[in-house]
Length: 523
Image 1 (cartoon, rainbow, N blue to C red):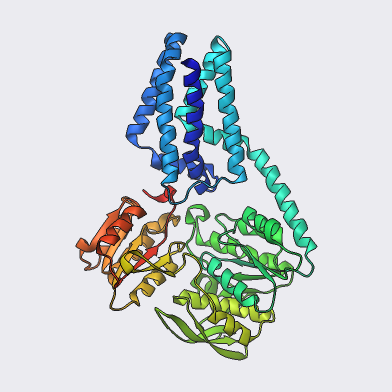
Image 2 (cartoon, rainbow, N blue to C red):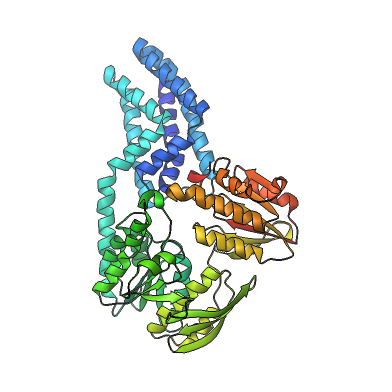
């Protein structure tokens, strides 16, 4: 029974790690953020159970090795339960664990540790064997420790692996003749602008862009190593950041020739701490491009950029003084039409993309493409063929024949308010919003979520907030209006929110899914 219980403990530890690694991955492998999730996730009853088991373990060790052996079955059963919960939580999650090479290495390391402890506890007599058995039991009951152990122990290995991949990516970039690299960054709008720019440039060039939200150093490196071809002429590289220096790190890999900055705003203030740091970080792209004598386009309609950027950047937007701008904009639920001014040329364009922010994204991308040699005629044609970026104001069918505006990947204050405005354009329909609000806004988070709640109340017929605690500032915003609270619902998960929506949805309903947060934020 002792050996069987030991084996169960080891297996339970591995099962429990699935949930721990899932959350570590969603927190970008940052120990500090992972600790924060642990603190918010611990349920009192399960913490009490594990502490009781820890007390029993200490009692068994102090009294007798035989009692320890006899108690292992109980410990194994408890650990197996927590392991099963970890697997179940992952399978029911919005964003499941992705078994990347890094996660596989961490599992291998953790498995080796548990196997070694199990074998030593089974084969070695005396105090040493008891210590190994106790350690195995502790790590199985408290997999958070094993998760952190694997994270820190493998850091040197991860640095070596990363360095190898980065050097290989640099080699590939150097091997592509006459390759132009365009860097795109911003607090928001960068992914949509990236796809718009890629579509326009593709009218004349062979273009590669970073897929989806591959905007970290290793995401960029992976794109280069797996997708770069010898005949690629332009590489459009999205650059994300959560800390000062993150954009520079990517620029040091790809060395951009041209840049585009879509916005500077209150994103990731938990790590940036201030708008000044956000501005400094986004303009690390400008610094890199300036070294190569290239041009950087920046959104002049963005207040922070307009106030702080000097004449070294090319501003675009809606101001009549901008060289690249949109005029006579009309829009609604079918898209937008406007006059696109490209220096001395003017062309009328139409797009199926929703929202004023997409007009700005188009102007920025069009201006940059124009300077790279794409004609105004080709630009207008490409704009007419644009389709929504996945999960960004993407129109879909939903339950009971209703309409879904999927804006799940929109996580910035301005973009969320614009999405609510888009929802408001669906006149004559029952308008519903499902949202957990916004995150990573530092001490501004309450303010922006309250504003989102107020905006939703002015437009929607029914409101569904996700997250019992998360929804508090959203609810406060609603209560500042005359909205009937009988039409406001609070769900604990997106699954529950959709169940609530399905009760009153019909063919004349439109629902906005605004910001689909991963599990580490839903509380």
